[in-house]
Length: 359
Image (cartoon, rainbow, N blue to C red; front, side, top):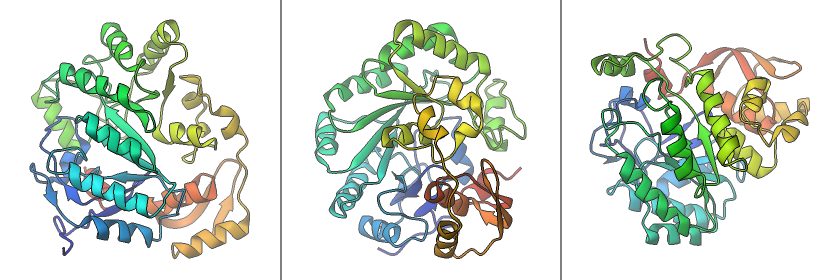
């Protein structure tokens, strides 16, 4: 099929901070009030924008893609398990398997996997990470109820090969950060999931307006416009309860931390540059991150050439500073391919961020 643009923008492929996302569909009808992608004004009914074979073909020749290295997320401009999207998502997985890729492949959803779905994913010769978003928020903020979430999670007990990750997000002050809700959550997820990633709420103008309508106060400032925010004492509360009741259950602050831990490598987004990211949940990957090495200038030159950049740079103790402007996609590519933090004096936004970050 011919590629369909949305508001004259191509959303079939985009390198986010953690993964390169490939999309045959956009749009979602789950209606979560906190969704930062609502700013993109995708259709409420999921809409197909490209065929699966072409989506994968586009990925394989893309300048930002590195075989067996770059994490890939599938249909995250929708929910990949929506009824009208799921078969397309699974077709993409089969094509990726035919390509014999070893890259981490992310499936991030609030929807249910049936036993047949789990058997299918378990059967694939792929490195699949299934992320279940489950935050414990009320039905005033998301349509997917707590009871439904709990029921769908139980089915994951049948999974044996796929990696099972609980996305504990967003944590919102006064909504799902109390001790009772946290304890109930960890009682549900710890016996089933391999780990949880704990994260907060990112707030732009549109999300802030929705929360104002709901009469819920959320932090809205220059930091939360760009980053997910959680109060420090909430992390401490979660860590304390984990240590008491499930001391061997893994908690991480970032997706890249978890992915790198399972790959036995330093965190490719270098979150260890801020020691609090390592300390807050006693990250088990600190030894790998502490052994990070500065890249050779030849490797830097090869990677700059691949993405068509010629920026001058300075190698510092814990990052490389590139002169002038680079896109977020450039920097994401360099982070993982150089194994070292890449920053630039100016940053060009991705197709999504150019809309999301507008004040």
